[in-house]
Length: 389
Picture 1 (cartoon, rainbow, N blue to C red):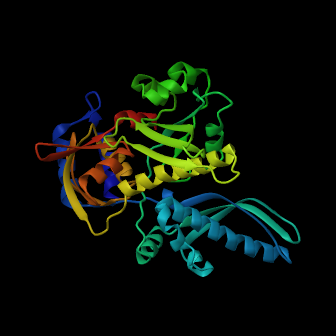
Picture 2: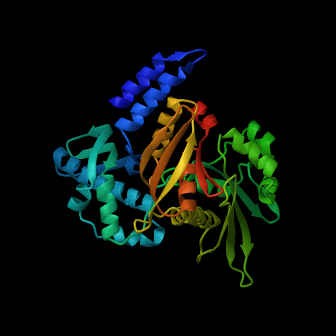
């Protein structure tokens, strides 16, 4: 209530070109600090605990029985997707032993869309909202490491090379087709495939420039999709010395982050396996590798708590409110204490899990820039991102 009143009073005091009268403003700031010292802001990362688009189609001896079976199947599907989203692939098997009632206890509520039924059949599309704390407790009880930080969307450029020919935009790019067959948006690293329209062609031309890492061209196509990171996924068809067909996959990240890296894997064809089937396996594998690497960089380290005192430059109360909104989205931020608020700066203590580099990476995803200069930390609010919203 005090924060609402405080905001209203500031609005009333905007005079002289929009600047509040300084002595009175200082009084309100003093009241704010005196009446709510150390007021915590708790992180609320509920978006990763929503699972949408769960399709169920069940037949049973009656409509009621079909619906009951469908909803139970939907819960299992939703939890499997949530578990996959949060954890590393090697831990997938650990979710298999959960019973229906155990999964149901993790669900806060669900929504139903496109519902259809007959006397023996039930169809629907379901959305589930899971209980964050209960899911976290379960994963910790299973000794499963997990992450919740969601990356900003990245642009995935699928370059296919075979017999010396390089394809990026061409319709005859089976690598691109294979990537369209998997869900690239459901994980912690949402990926976008380019449209391949004239605007894209003007930006980067062909796959050769992408493979060479032409930073100017990659930056141009990133602008087309309003992303900061481009990942070039290069699939080169090859044959081993033993005559076995294979795909050498290299995924190289380009962007402003300090963590730009390259992932690589080799997929060998199985007996009588078609190129299309091999590409499908490769698409799922490289997407999984990208997700796993991100999760490893962002695993929640409950045993490693820390605090950073930071100064946040602001242009007014609205900037402080916006900073709070963004901080609430950061999974590893446990709470934020407001120490001092003035017209042009907020001084805060950020309590978080992990190390400073992990915090820095997580904050980047919500357009907050953390930096250290001469032992002092500052937190910058990306104003351009705020205007886009």
